[in-house]
Image (spheres, rainbow, N blue to C red):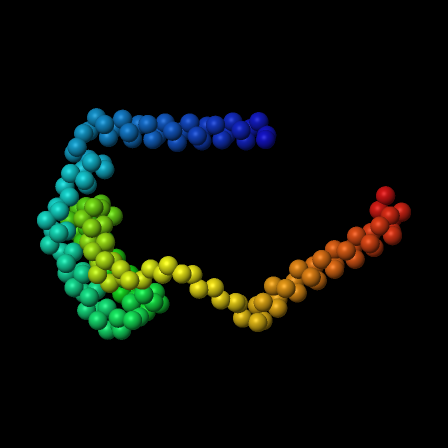
Amino acid sequence: MDRHVLSLLQLLVSVVCGSLEKGFIRTEHQGRGSGLQHAAHNCNETIVVESLPDCGYMFEILMLRVEPSQWCNLTKVIMHYDMLSKCAEETARSGNCFWPNNLAEKFIIGVHTKFFSNCTSDTVIWEDPPDDILTALILIPVFLTAAMISLVVWCSKRGDIFE
């Protein structure tokens, strides 16, 4: 590596480390009144606990539109689950709490227990790919092997040119 590039890289690392250290020292001296500690200190868990069931109720209404036999089909429930996740995140943020947090985690686990507890499958069902893909997966290595053998033979016969 060029000596100038190495020097610039060392300068960049020292600047980044120095600014991180200053930020850490500033946070330590300011105490609980600012920074990350401020958000955790002002978390209103009551708002979160009271609002998360509303998200669950909305999700339950949406899931009732889907046949229970299709609850394990991700394509059928992914939009509803995305809305649930966004609602839970907005609820946590409205209570000035981190996302994800323990309250939301317990809530999501409860939703999974209620709707998706039977979605695990012990047996793996193996399927063959479609015929056109299978044909391509077989023929491409065969043609590449034939092409490489032909290239090696051709180069070995024309050794006087390549030396």
